[in-house]
Amino acid sequence: MSSALGARDAARLQECMAGGGVAVFPTDTVYGICCDPDNEHAAQRMYEMKGRPRRRASAVMYFSLAGALDALDDLPDSERAALQALLPGPVTLLLENRTRRFASACRKDPATLGLRVPRLPDHLDALASVERPVMQTSANMSGEADARSLAEVPQELREGADVVIDGGELPGVPSTVVDLREFDAQRRWYILREGALQAGIVKDKLASL
Image 1 (cartoon, rainbow, N blue to C red):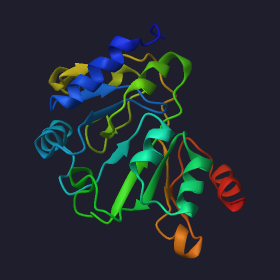
Image 2 (image 1 turned 60 degrees about the vertical axis):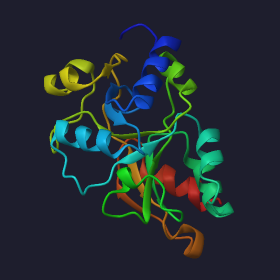
Image 3 (image 1 turned 30 degrees about the vertical axis):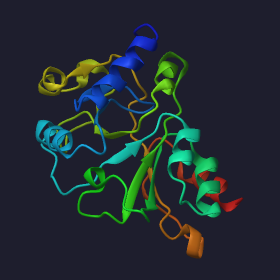
């Protein structure tokens, strides 16, 4: 594993997003590629780099739960409680996007927002200081295997990105995707993909709310 990330790594990522760039970075699950979620030009470049269908949505990642809750100020109490139960953690939550935020990330489905808040391990904890959200997807070519190490990130992505951050070896299992769009109205939720967080844990956390 590489040495722990420092404040300069977090600053590089934040500066890259502010400047409209694209970055490869480590998360709590697999390596990701990201850009500013409000910058359509950067989003199109990121999609082109990895061959991702342009109509397919990407998640928006906040690096702290407090930051996500402050920014998403239209969430009803039930959804806020669900976020607090599941995040930070290796999950992607699909939420009703009531104010149509982050059009570049939501793509063809502006009514849905995919949200990530990673539970950063100690050696990646410096990323918690990144204040702005990022639009992110896995750092692989579309449809190919996720990258557990920087060496597994395709060379064309590493060379095409403006910033590349090495976080050493990661768990390598993608996030669990949980659909919460019916949670407030009907207390219904669905697991669309079981990944790093077991379905039983998701059920236990949400059933107790």
